[in-house]
Amino acid sequence: MDCIFCKIANGEIPSKKVYEDDKCLAFYDLNPQAPVHVLFVPKSHIASVNEITEENSDYVSHIFTVIPKVAKELGLENGYRIINNCGADAGQTVMHLHFHLLGGKEMGEKII
Ligand code: 5GP
Ligand code: ZN
Image (cartoon, rainbow, N blue to C red):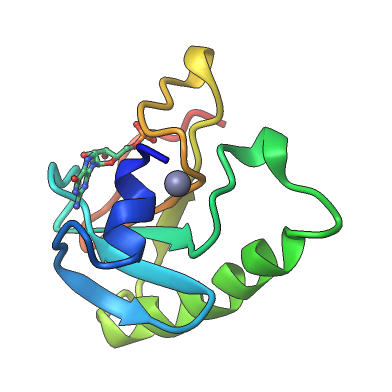
C-alpha cells in the first residue's frame, strides 16, 4: 500500500523518532506548527477516525496512554494540545490516522 505513514512506521521512510513500541510510533512533524510538534501513528493502517472499530481501537487507546508520557519527557508540563483532522473538511492530508501533539508555547486562540 502506498501510504507514507505506513512507510514511516515500518522504517522504509526515515523520520525523527520520539517514541516507538509494537503498536505505535511518534515522530516529529516535517512542518512544525509549534516548538514541539509530534505525530502519533498506529502501526496498523487505519485511514482516519472514521475507520476506528471495536477490533482496532486498542491501537488508539494505547496511543492515548503514550501521549502523556511523551509530553512529560518533552517538557510539556505546562500543557499541550492534541489535534486530529478527519476528512476533507478538516483538512486531513495524510490518510493514515495520526494525532498531532503541539506544545512548547501558549497555544493561542481555541476553536472550541
Ligand atoms: P494532517 O494535515 O493530515 O492532519 O497532517 C499531516 C501532517 O503530516 C502535516 O502536519 C505534515 O507536515 C506531516 N507530514 C507529511 N508528510 C510527512 C513526512 O514525510 N514526514 C513527517 N515527519 N511529517 C510529514
Ligand atoms: Zn498507512
